[in-house]
Image 1 (cartoon, protein in one colour):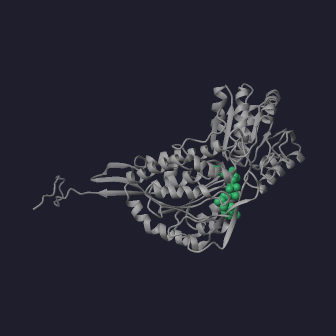
Image 2 (spheres, protein in one colour):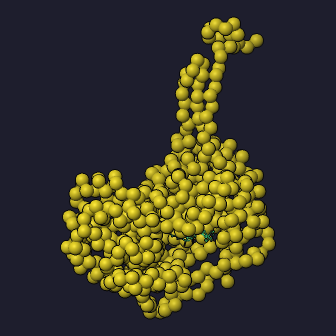
Image 3 (cartoon, helix red, strand yellow):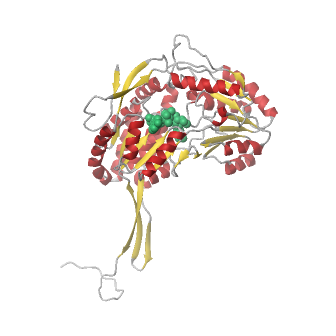
Amino acid sequence: MRQIDHFIVGGPGAPAARKGDIFDPNNGGVQAQVALGDAALLDKAVAAALAVQPAWAGTNPQRRARVMFKFKELVEANMDALAHMLSAEHGKVIADAKGDIQRGLEVIEFACGIPHVLKGEYTQGAGPGIDVFSMRQPIGIGAGITPFNFPAMIPMWMFGVAIACGNCFILKPSERDPSVPVRLAELMLEAGAPEGVLQVVHGDKEMVDAILDHPAIGGVSFVGSSDIAHYVYNRGVAAGKRVQAMGGAKNHGIVMPDADLDQVVNDLAGAAFGSAGERCMALPVVVPVGDDTAERLKAKLIPAIEALRVGISTDAEAHYGPVVTQAHKEKVEGWIARCAEEGGEIAVDGRGFTLQGHENGFFVGPTLIDHVTPDMDSYRNEIFGPVLQIVRAPDFETALSLPSKHQYGNGVAIFTRNGHAAREFAARVNVGMVGVNVPIPVPVAYHTFGGWKRSAFGDTNQHGTEGVKFWTKIKTVTARWPDGGGDGSNAFVIPTIG
Ligand code: NAD
C-alpha cells in the first residue's frame, strides 16, 4: 500500500509508530496510509527550520520573490498531475481540483510582489535631526494547520505569504488528503527555496498540540471546524503565540423579490452543491423574501437540482463527486434526517444515493429542504454536504437578521436588482464577507479572507496585507543624527577623511 511520509530535512528517520488511513472516496476502501507524527518529529523539523531561517530572512526580498515566481511556474506545469492527485484523495471533480490549486496560486502571485508590500514607513524630521522609520521583520518560524476541503489553496494562503516574508514554515495538512501538500513542498524546493524553508509534518491532535506548545514556533494559522479552531486559538495564545484560527460556516443567500431567479438558480446549483457542498464559502441556506418569491424559486430549483449529475471525481460531466469519507456521508445524511424530524419539508432527498459501478463510494445526492426555521438544530449547525435549506423570510429586515444572528459569520450573499437594498444589506449585515449578486464572495488574493463570530478566532485575516501583518512583526526606529559639529551650533558639517 502507498505510504505517505513527512517531508522534513533529513527525512523522518524511523518508520512511523502510528498511521492514518487515506480512503478512496469514489470506491470506498483504503488507498494509502499516512504517517502520524509526534513532538519528537516536530522537534526535528523545527531544528532544521531554525538552522536556515536567519539566512532566509537575510535573503533580499526580490530573491525570495523569484523563488515564488519559479514555484508558480512549476505548479502550473504540474497542474494536471496535481489536480488528479487532489481529486483522488478528496473526491472533488477535476475542474474543482484545478480551481483549488488556481486560487492558491493567486496568493503566490500576490507573494511575488512582496518587495513592494514589505516597504516600511518613513517620517523625515519627526524632531530636530530625528527621523522615524519602520520595518517589517519575519516572525521566524510559522506553522499552518489545514482542513481537508482545500488541500492546495489553504496551505498556499499561508505558506505563500509567510515564506515570502522571510519565515520558515511548517505545514500540518489534513491527514485525510495529505499528498498534494507534500508535492507542493517538493516543488518549492525545486523552485529554489533552501531546504528547511518549507516542511510538512503529518498528524492528528497529537501533532497539533505539539505545534501549539512548541516554544520556537512564533505564529500558527489554522483553518478547520469551529470547535477545534477555538481550541487551537486558546491553546496557542496561552503558549504566547500569535494565532489566527478560521472556523466553520453557514452562509446565507438572500433572494429579494426583484432578483433574476434564473441566475439565482444557476448560482445556487454551483454554490450549494459544487464540491459536494464541502466548502466553507458554500451557500447552504437560501432565504427568499416573501412567499411568492419562495414559491417561484422552489419551482425553478427542484428541476435544476434533479438535473445535477453526481459522478466519480474524474467524470468530466459530473457536477460534483463523493464526499470525503463514509463517516462524513453518514453525518450529512444524519443531518437531513434530523432536519425532517424537526419539521423541514424534504423537496429533493439525496439520501441512499448509489452510483452504478461505485456502490461503495461516499456519494450523497443533492438535497433540498423547505420550511426550515431558525430554531432547528440542522439550521444552527454546519452540515458541509450537498444540502440546501430554504428559510422563508417575510421581509428584508427579517432576511437581514437571519445571517446577522447566526453563530457563524463567514460569507453571505444578496441577490437583487435594487442598489439601495444591496448597499443597506452590505453595510448592516453582521458577517465578514459579502456578495452582491455574487454567490461565493471569496475575495481575490490581494484583498483578505476572513469571517466573523464563530467563523474566525483572532483578529487578522488570511492573505493580502492582513496576511503580511500576521507573518511579520513591525519594528519602529527613531534615529537622531546630530549635526556632528560638536560645538553646539547647528552648522551642517560633513565629515572629511584624512
Ligand atoms: P477539522 O477541524 O476536522 O480539521 C482541521 C485540522 O484540525 C486538521 O489538520 C486536523 O488534523 C486537525 N484536527 C482535527 N481534530 C483535531 C483535534 N481534536 N485537536 C486538534 N486538531 C485537530 O476540519 P475538516 O473537517 O478538515 O475541514 C472542514 C471544516 O473546515 C469545516 O468546518 C469548514 O467550514 C472549515 N473550513 C473553514 C474555512 C474558513 O476559512 N473559515 C475554510 C475551509 C474549511
